Length: 263
Image 1 (cartoon, helix red, strand yellow):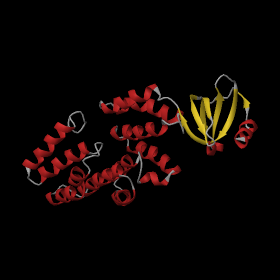
Image 2: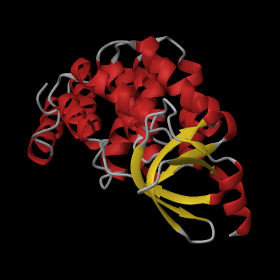
Image 3: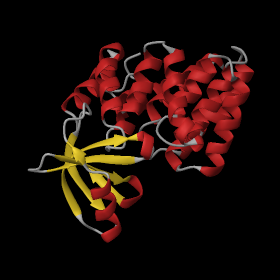
Image 4: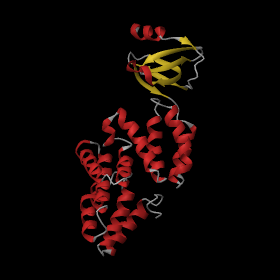
């Protein structure tokens, strides 16, 4: 407690900084709750804090903050809906603002994840890579795990960096959670099909990628629609239209609102 208060008082300055701040509640490592406005300051890894009802800024070392909670930015839900409704470019401005304005304030990771998706779906591969690589710079494991990894892999694949994608997907399968592993198997299928449009490669993509996801990751709803769609395409290439129809039927029955069901 004394160390925290000393750090706060030592860094106190009169309010008036140009930093925009966000209202919320922080819990310190000694379980104090602090209510006011916050802004992350990268240069000294601290939160700039203004206590509710006061007009003084203090620096709270990030190491002394257990958690911090701020309300969801109003623009975020609308931006996510724009992506889901097929308008990714319209979502980008608001997602950029949230990602920049809510650094270390709960919502930056969510905004960054959807920003990567919006750029990728807008065919802006370079910006997708830029967003993901900013995350990877501070957390190297983000290249094969976490919220940006699947979009990073797809962007790398579009750049022809297939061997890098294969390495990262294998690492994800071996070391990460079930959801990321499912995405890794999916992108494995994409890497295989990047080698050519043949029945033999379609069979391999099914075995090592899409059908594996459909059968073994049925509880991972995020990845099922794409896996079903691509599995159907592979069965068509193998002249197995009956099995392709089964994949499409399951896709439309189970995930009727997905972008893949509407293709």
